[in-house]
Amino acid sequence: MKVYAVIPAGGKGKRSGSSVPKQYVKFNKKELIVYTLEVFQQNKLIDEIVISADTSRFPLLNRIKDKYRLTKISSIVEGGKERQDSVYKGLCALHCNKKDIIVVHDAARPLLPSDVLTNAIIAAQKKGNALVCIKAKDTLIKGSKTVDNYVDRNEIYYVQTPQIFRYSDLMQAMETAYKEGFTGTDESMLVARTGKKVHIVEGSAFNFKITTPEDFKLFKKLL
Image (cartoon, rainbow, N blue to C red):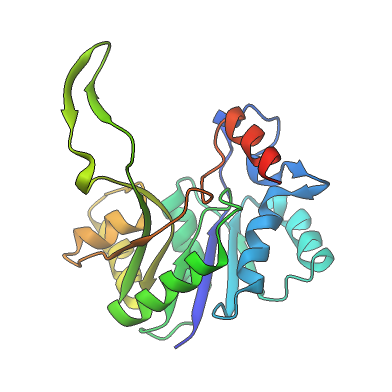
């Protein structure tokens, strides 16, 4: 049973306020995506890495692969219009067995702790899938300009990545979504639509997605 990482990196990063997509912004002279890829390169459970990206970024990604000795990158494929399309194209580039494990992770989550990744992969190998989340700890409200009501946070989680599934389950979920014209916000939503139970595993506050200018500032401070 092999473990493959699919890194969708085709986003435009419009909310980041940067002139280039956020995953290619440099921090300490190193592109953001490099920090993410190094987590997977260094994890002993990961066998191969596939990146889905805009074709204009292929030369840069190939230079990054060589410069940082990211030997587990097996292919760089063209991304799609939506995240779902990019992940699907990454899946199609793999030569998997049905029970192989697919780890999907956002390019812009560079501080994924290695133990979170390891524990999630082990959980998926045992249970068939694993969804990395962190439990809500703040008071939650529902409303617009005023408070309508308060939401019980005891069963509320913030969904992160990686999201991990058996190859056959994820491929079936994606093909079903395409047949039905459905676009999900993440892979867990697609798999859950097929009737599979998705298992929650513990994430980390460090594993935040860099989206806004404030996220950039926080990442710089943590570095």
